[in-house]
Image 1 (spheres, helix red, strand yellow):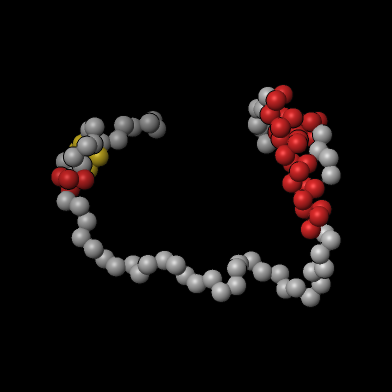
Image 2 (cartoon, rainbow, N blue to C red):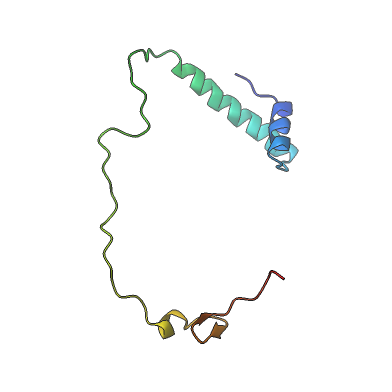
Length: 95
């Protein structure tokens, strides 16, 4: 499937992206290649294959949440540009 430069311009406008002429040509070529590859996948018979949202056999890879001592306040604030008595000083940006 061939994606035109005009179609890339339309999608860029919808996404409110500013793209140069060179980028439009590059994106048109890349998107065309992706869609061509997806079209090749249609040749495979997937009848009877259950849809899956994850890889089978995947297990939780997170470590256990164990409470540990944290940094002392003085060490945590050692490189802060500005400080208050109990933490970082953040400039007010909302009036």
